[in-house]
Amino acid sequence: MEESRPHRGLRGALERNFGYAWAAGLVMAAATVMFSVVAELPIRDPDSLIPGYIRFPAIVLGAVALDVVPRVVARARGRLSDYGSTFAAVLRERWTRAHCLYALGGVGAWYLTYATFRNLKSFVPFVNSHNWDTELRHLDRFLWFGHDPAVVLHHLFGTGWAAQFFSGVYFVWIGLVPISIAIALVWTRRTTAGSWYVTAVAFDWMLGAAVYLMVPSTGPIYTAAQRGQFADLPHTYNTDLADSLWDDRVTVLGDVFGSGTLQTIAAFPSLHVGIMVTICLIVQYVGLARWIRVVSWVFLGLTVLATIYLGWHYFVDVLAGAAVGSVTVWAAALATGNHVGLRPRLAQESDELVDA
Image (cartoon, rainbow, N blue to C red; front, side):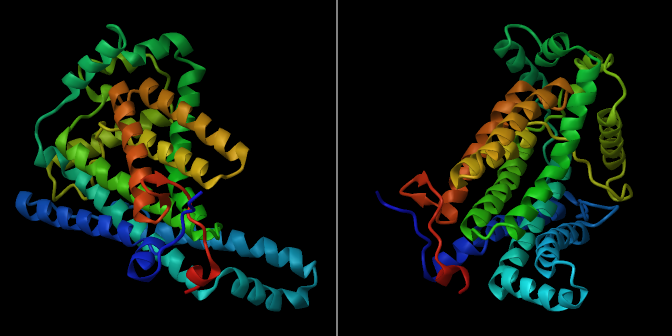
């Protein structure tokens, strides 16, 4: 059977060092600048409280500490005089020059795609004024035999504990992506696997932003025809988040330069679902432990239910998100050398290529 192996030369360097993720980020940066100039829109840091260029490196540094410190403690065995030399030895062993460059390259590519994605998402109502919520709702009702999916789930699960539970699922997802990026860049020593995942997420942002611009929508919770369906849900973290995002949107639409923030409402496709599909497929292809694969697929199912139950997305948003997540895993496999022909497969890795 033919095996997937990393390529050498320039192509191999691009595959192993996030070259195509950087390319996606540069395309998105060019689009961001173009829309900013043509539509006279400001480009902003997407994280006003703790800037992303501080937050993401902090996550990575924290992950490095978690990677190194337990090993130091285990090897030093309580001998205080050995901690300094043991720390230096573990750091040299775990963090070679090649791996440091690998992690820094991944963080940079990730942040570029993330920051430009957030700005492009904010530009949507200024670039394309058409709203597709009515059409998306009609598609949902057609697929669900005349019913609204959120109402069906409210009847199925009730509007008590389920609202709290699904709000928690939604909250966990928010932290999952940056943490998973840190894991891919810090703890894994299979750089082919890490570059595949980070590149796939970069492609998720790029394709998601493109579809947002083509098919603007706000989601059931923000539309007049469906907003009342969520009135009986108890107050949760999700309630505060939904109100905050709507306030930001109103402020930005009222004074885009004076608002000092970004609007982040866009429903089609659901990138919550898209990125979870990406995670699930990557852990399958990489062959992680069975419990990780099972937990990933279960959390994907809960994410689907949460986004519909809470009103963030239409059912068709979920279908589109799943398609985005699947396509980007395949495209990233081709872009990072993790394929045999057109079939995704984790590439074999050699020390010579990793440490070059």
